[in-house]
Length: 131
Image 1 (spheres, rainbow, N blue to C red):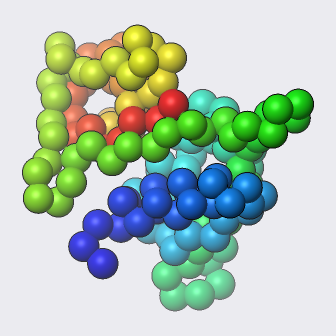
Image 2 (cartoon, rainbow, N blue to C red):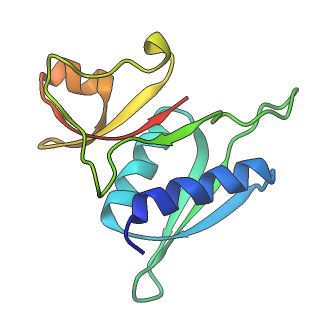
């Protein structure tokens, strides 16, 4: 597999389309950090890191609207790919849906959202857009 982050996002997308409650994904440090950001921003309801195997897994409980049964995550888009990395400085950080969505960045301060990167005045690699 050449792009584990794209695989992570695709597994989440497929589970949301199939209306699954829980999705299980092979773990890595960057995937764990992205999962923490998604949980902190309210896009997933819960997560659990399972380190019983060599690689470990991440179990993510997906979040849906109680009334309309619509998923909390409408779109997940991979931006920086292995063939073309996208880096942005602190001045030109992207705004997703005019501030309604988030861009997840890998920076020197860790994996954070675009809004946090603006307050810390730090740039980095734009991993994905979530809204």
